[in-house]
View 1 (cartoon, rainbow, N blue to C red):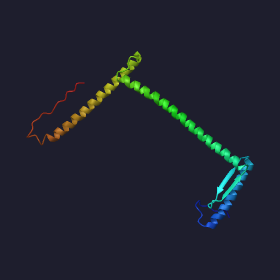
View 2 (view 1 turned 30 degrees about the vertical axis):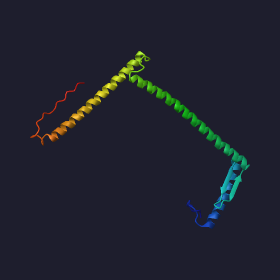
View 3 (view 1 turned 60 degrees about the horizontal axis):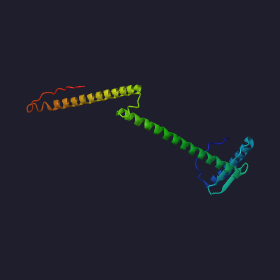
View 4 (view 1 turned 60 degrees about the vertical axis):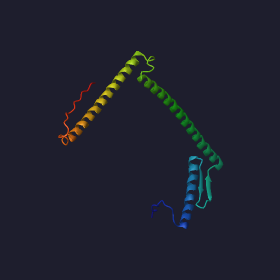
Length: 177
């Protein structure tokens, strides 16, 4: 008869929990020893019971393995911090260059510092300004037409009710673009 599937949850019965802890602790210790022997690995296992009792297994010197662990953790943390610092410095430098470029571009769009530009750059700036001006005019025209439509709608709503009191003509719009 095979074993049944074990549900992974806390064992409620204290005696059963203690027996299981002892068996599994010994099994873990055996697996750690096998890993150490078969693979020539340095293995350290530290276990604290629910009552705070310490159990440990080490294939070599525990202090030596713990020192290696500390050095590994701290050196990798130092490397991570150093890399993050370098990345931040590079990002700050990149953002400074971008900021200066945007400020220069803004000054050029405002008509300032144009003497330092070459003819080709001035032509590109002129085309860019023409496109911007054209878009602004299109947007202005669209907004004016929308306002005109709103006014016509209001006039039609108000017109029939006030037809006896107010005589008015529909306004005509002349756009000069």
